[in-house]
Each structure stands twice: as C-alpha cells, then as structure tokens.
Image 1: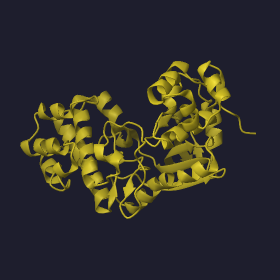
Image 2: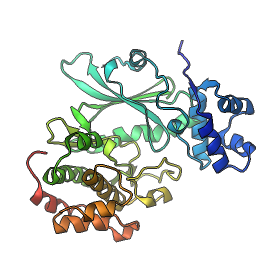
Image 3: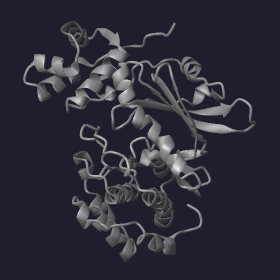
Image 4: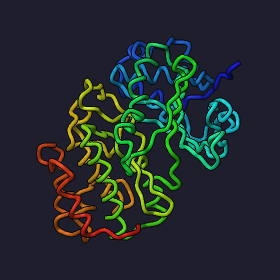
Length: 353
C-alpha cells in the first residue's frame, strides 16, 4: 500500500497570498477548488496531504494565480527517506542510487521534480541521470494535461540525438496511470552551471569557452525549429573535466510545428524572455536567456541589471555589443540568430575551461 505524505503549510504565507490575490476567502476557495475545512486545517497549522496541496497549486495556476509548493512549505520539512524514494522509483532496467537523490525542484509550470543517478542493471558501468515527476496528487484529467510537457524533453533530445551539447535521452516511463513519470538521460559526470561558477570562479577566457558550447547547443535547437524558452544555469551541466556543456531539462521547450502551449501562469524565472508569458515563441527568446546567463556567469549572481554586468566586463567589442543588444526587452531589437556570435566566441575560446 502506498504511503500518504503529510506536510504542514506555513499559515502566514498562505494567508498573505490570499489577501494579496483575492478580495474574499470565498474567491480563493473557488479558484483553489478546496473546501473550507481543508483551508481551516492549513491556516491553523494542521497537517494535510501533500497531494491536496499539489492539486490546489495546479488549480490556482489554471486560474491565473500561480503559487508553488516551495512557497507554502518550508524547505526544512521532513522528506521521505531516500531509500524509500529509491524503492518507489525502481525500474526493471535501472536501479536508483538512493544516496544520489537530489532536492525537490519546482519547474516553471508548477510540476515538482527530483533527480538521481541510476545504474543499469545489466550493463556494467552504464549510468543514467534519472528525473522523476510525482504527480499522484492530481486528478486524471490534469495528469493527462501535463503529458505533453513530460514527454517533450525526450522528443527534443531525439531530434538532436547526435548533438554533443544536448542531453541524450535513453528512456521515458509513465507508471500508475500517468501518476509517476521517470526520464533517464545518459549520465554526465559534472555539475550544473550555477554550482560550477560558484565553486570554480572561472576567468573570462574560461567563461567564453563555456558560452561557446552553450551557444552551439541553443543554435542546434533553433536549426530544428525548437525554442528552449526555459534555459537557465540549473539546466546546463558542465562536465567534471570542464570540457563540455550539456543542455538538459527541456520539458518546456517549444516545437514550432506544434500548437502554442499556454505559458502565461508559469513560475517566475529571471532568465526567461519577457514575451514568453505573452505566448510569443521566437529564437530571440533564447538569445535573451543566453545573454542573461552570460551576465550571471560574469557577476556570479542573478543580476537585476544584467546590462551593467556585461558592460562592466572587459569583453571583446563584438561579443559585448551582441550580448548588450540581446538584453533588449523588445524581441525585434535583439539579434536574429546566434550564428553571428559563434565565430566571435571561437576566436576567443580556450581549449579547456
């Protein structure tokens, strides 16, 4: 029998959210699709099912009032034992390494994800990067609504199978009537870009080499008519030998031949181009994200004024002007392609970073 996960909401945060976004408590109850008894339990600090909160968050996002699980529940809340989680995630082909299970991460569309290292049960020294999306708290209709996003990463990776800068997807599994999803990519020994920058503090020549690999990956997406939309430091892996970048977590990428997906209620992301929330999906959106990421690597923090971080760096003129133009809040003012930047970065790159 599956264990029910119980959590406590930080009442002050929920009360503040209600007061800031709704005129009456009744309006909140209608948007959240919960009863007064459940709300009372939350506001008085009583425990409620984690599934109930996840479903409430999803309904609020649909109503245009996004709220994440992290906003409601303290990061220090007790998590299920890693061995217990690993047992739930096991597959016939892959064995999850319990000690490698990472922290909960809320994606921009509100889905909660965790990742871990997995070992192939038959092939010696074959490892994968497993991501698990547990949406058991959502109704079947809502689970099916998320199906497109949860299959998109694998779809995108397969379109760019031989591209070194794009994650190689191995398998995708949905179990328990689409309640528990697991994605396995080829394992990359290394760390996310934000951790790499913090730990290694690379110099400018090293950063330019990193930018070149990221730009190659984004350009490869664009050549397949794919817009990344949600490219950010946490979704870029730097290999442990510091020679390769890999773009991953492409669940929210946009395939231009497909219908437009609703993105107006996504969670905040400082690297996302402003027009994305208005439904615009063009290559200039990823060029904006690229420039914001470059500014982050220069300043080693998320800058409110990314322009200042770029302008104050001793960058070659061509690279600096490209990045500056890329930060325009209006997409028509940005460069039309990364193709013109690639040779500029090639000239300045260093063999290792």
